[in-house]
Image (cartoon, rainbow, N blue to C red; front, side, top):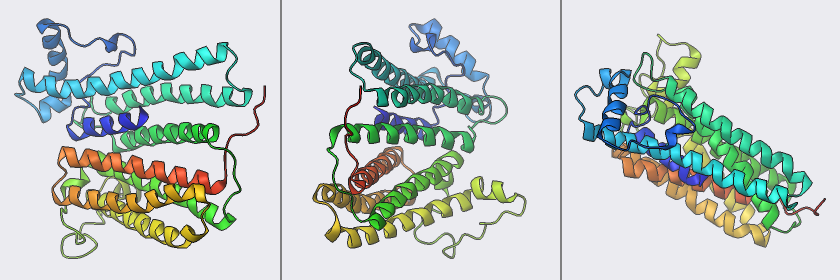
Length: 327
């Protein structure tokens, strides 16, 4: 469900639907507009937003419905994740089927899930006052927390499903962990690409303008931080460099580690080696075609798949597995 949520969130951003609902109602907001009067009220609220006034003036009600439904599904799916997690957790807790060592981590996961909802609204609120877009910093933080929750849940699930095994050589374990971090950081750089619409410029590869480094990489009007995270040319270049570094690092790791990998780790390692090439191809195609929604969403799904395979590989190389149950 979280995997799907990240993809839905990406589509919401790509279709510029995230600012179509201008209020946050964690409970009452689960009910969509039920009639024409409700739709007119929602549309009137949106017409007071900077996005409508500055970008979408003259939009029809039918056009508004399209962007509304993407944001509504995004928010509804978040609520469903909360229910799908909390209800079984409370049931298993009440019936004594949650080991003591897992009670606090699982409770914290739910807490961070609730925080994620608040962070999402904080992100949306940044585009409802003066500018018709959300803060790229808040958008990337929202993505980062989603991936962190996903990673912790996946790691716990793998601990419960896999028996413990002898770890690979320590150097390979550290390398696998570093690759997982590198994939995460590359995805965060992708968040800034999405947040600044940096994929809509320099739609060529490997060149950016007349060279490998774009001529407007440094904007003298911006400080170091703003130039790094807000200048579209710099943001796109950083994501490119991190992506190419990821491809090279994963390929080198596969070459070195494959002969020494534990048998249980080889399927994940092979999948990681293949997926990094697929993901690079998706990224280049998305750039060359000027970010079509379907392809860009597939690229985002590919990023989560790559992150998943990196976690699976790291877990297998570390020899982690189910610890002895404790009451």
